[in-house]
Length: 242
Image (cartoon, rainbow, N blue to C red; front, side, top):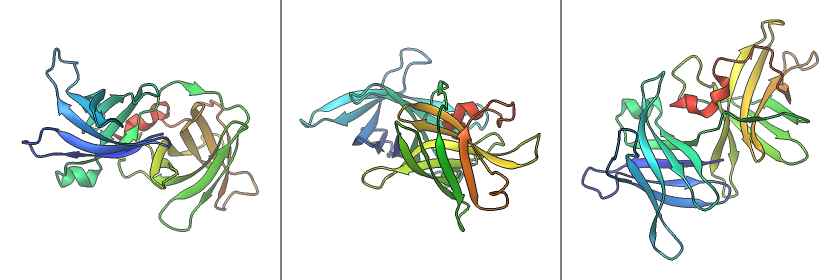
């Protein structure tokens, strides 16, 4: 569960990029500094931060990348702040690319390994404005309240329709997943397919309407059952926004 921002600096600056990365456990100022490349796949940058003693330390590496389907540039980072390594991407909205802005948003990169849905409870409710949803998902080990916000990065048909966000203790929005609008080929009913990064791992669930809910604003979250109706590439989740 990560969020953050990254800004491209002027060419004369010592750090190519500066930014912040947030999670439910930390808020860290980071810099991306150029590093000599040993091969084509060597990292393009060192990711550095200042520790509690005031010493600058290397906490990861980063690569300049290009989206396979969109062709849009983004930055892939692998970072370890002492809690184990994690991966995030820094991407731009269509508006930022059009304005040739140096502003990026840091988003998590989920793995392809999925936990089993098991016993899941949850509900999703369409809000009256902004094409958004509010909801919760819970089991005996976690309880997450979240919102579905329209995905402003969507540029391909397979990209998610919504981003799933929770709030950090300080109120910073943290992206924890993606959601796709879908239609059942058997019943013709609309539903949402969700991929969520929970404390126990990546989780796939569907938000569907029963007979009593149909035509209303409320959906029930149920465990995912593979019926072959999942939106294409849904399993790759957050990597599709680049």
